[in-house]
Image 1 (tube, rainbow, N blue to C red):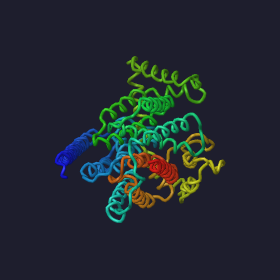
Image 2: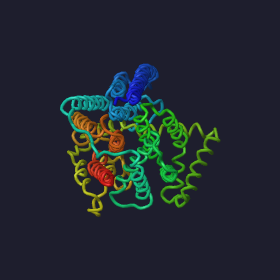
Image 3: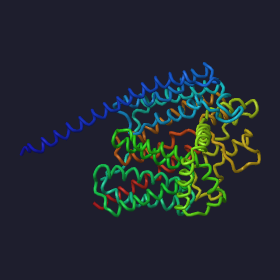
Length: 486
């Protein structure tokens, strides 16, 4: 018998879905137009207010990096079949922040040859070539021979039935990230913790019933996690979790999480100024190194309040802190320095820095005496950027810098194109709009670390295969067990 009311309900639901998608597309197109307008206006402003030390030829190259970095964002916003996570756009923004914007800083970043005033034309040219090669290789491979790569698939599941295993996963993350340290478990623990937080947000936002007990457990774990990241003194750890959740929120609502972004910026601006003073008191045997987490948090807050209540010391400290923060992420300075020193003073590495990647697949629990990842220290001592006998300090070795240190300009040109090919494969596998919510959150958790290229290859990619395999097998087992109980 024909059910008129069921048919009408399905019709209204379909109309509602179509209207919601049209509304989302209109919103994202407006964001795209706003981005293009901001780029045009911002480019004119930066050009007119560029430092005197930034010559015209350098400024043109920096502008190329700026526009190339935002090009994937424009394409993503205009793409009707866009993937859940803005994977390549986030990488482009990294290069804008680390290789373009520091060149327009009115403050001198660093001293002598370690400042933006000594950045070479060659380093900017190679950045443009490398970034362009990565983008072109990404899109060509994604829309041609990688088009039919199958995405991540898990057994069928119900979001409401994921609540119990996800609760255990979050508790596991807290235990093995902060309470019990087990070799080779820490990175897996961090990743599944992010998956747990992301999935609970989606389950909650879609109105599924979550018991008060579960809310209390997850809420307590999340607050404890934030507290531990905060008292650690590394603001980036909170930024990583906040950005991950921002990506999940964007996927779920197709809206840029303005409130979350504003909160993170306010948090960073508040505490970045005083983090150095806090670290002196709590790191390396400082007077508060053995204080309780609550005492450390109160100390950090008190230092920030004291700083902002004293206007005389505020401005100078804030300027030096801002310059320090920009200098830390200004990888174009390091890139230019390595180009100047290689091979004139230091011979090419000829691939030696990539050897550690081979041993990354062997868990430390199976090889207790496996050498630690120390390429940052080796790099710093090799180039004399730190003391030759300094075995404790590390110098970040960004992907593109590592390519040049090993194989020169051709290493950057070929290496960045190969990276584009690899990222296109990972996007097709872990960032497809055809995947379900759980697979998408797993993909975001796995892909997000690749959006920052400030570390060497083995550190960025070394654990991706083992961690992805462990997470896939774990959720496959959980979902199979649920199916068997039905």
